[in-house]
Image (cartoon, rainbow, N blue to C red):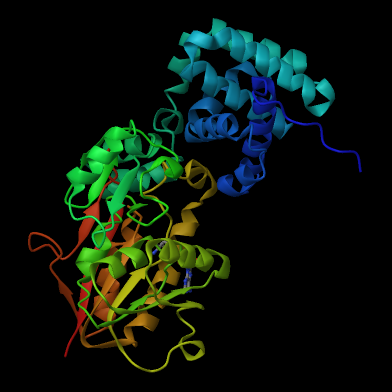
Length: 429
Ligand SMILES: C[S@@+](CC[C@H](N)C(=O)[O-])C[C@H]1O[C@@H](n2cnc3c(N)ncnc32)[C@H](O)[C@@H]1O
């Protein structure tokens, strides 16, 4: 096999465009964005990631902007994806429009035997000429205006008559990067912030242990990361360990643990006897890595938490964290592919699985014990409706206050945290 040509240190943008177009086409075809990005050569990855994330974040808008410029829908998915990434960059970098068009046309020459080079050139030049009219027309479509599928917009509007615009807008933004201090190692956020500043990283404290960075940085640049002084964890996710209220020596189950952010936080706050399960053995490996870096220990088991007979030793748990698989509608800005890949029916499927998981885990809870149910969703079927149905099925379940006497906490995505739902349920003694 001939050796692959080496990629230069600063590869031309055309290569990034061609590669991003392939990634976006794969995602439109149903593949996972992050998994596709893993196979992108390292030298190209930052540029490809920016183009692919950007194009997918505003896919509804890009699609509507391009439609009037194409005589008929473009069957060649990679070329359509090249146009989507080009339109994203033209809007994001209006100062660099000449380079965008030039490099996108060069990318087209590298793809599909160069058959679409003239078409790409013509579409992008027309895009520039007709921009104002195209935007006016596109914004008449809801999915272009709010950059989410129509069914998703309707669900959020119905559930949040006041806040739906904020929720959708937050879903289209760039996610914040937040750190969690390991309170076993550092007990004052301001001390760590001073160290960040010495490393040229701006940040502010959100509470005693959560620190919001002014902008994301690679973890290798964080002082003390490798030695377990801090972890990266969204502020909304940091609510879990405190709400669970695990006390020293308790038996705790983290039933859906990977990659282990909440597992580690629980262990940082108290010396508990913790079992961390995940159905995905590969993802469970990340729990092991995270705990190793932080110097923490738990019993790890790759198991389906509902298949109790395969892993449970019949000793009840005092606390259970059920951070269940969900639509991830509260963290869509971190996974912009999800909103276009999901179907309305997926939400009902997630809700069904969540109810099975809840019923299975309830059998494992000691009388007087507490189970914390958590999703990173803003959809009611997975949250309020799920828990209302659960307590009506289980006469021995009682909901406890989470904050201000409310028995549930629905965080909507904001500049400071992602969207999360929490509710704490106690089993009658
Ligand atoms: C929302 S993620 C958990 C995030 C994690 N608690 C954290 O804070 O890092 C949901 C996890 O549930 C796992 N999962 C899905 N179905 C499961 C099942 N039946 N039993 C155990 N784990 C399951 C998935 O593999 C996924 O890792």
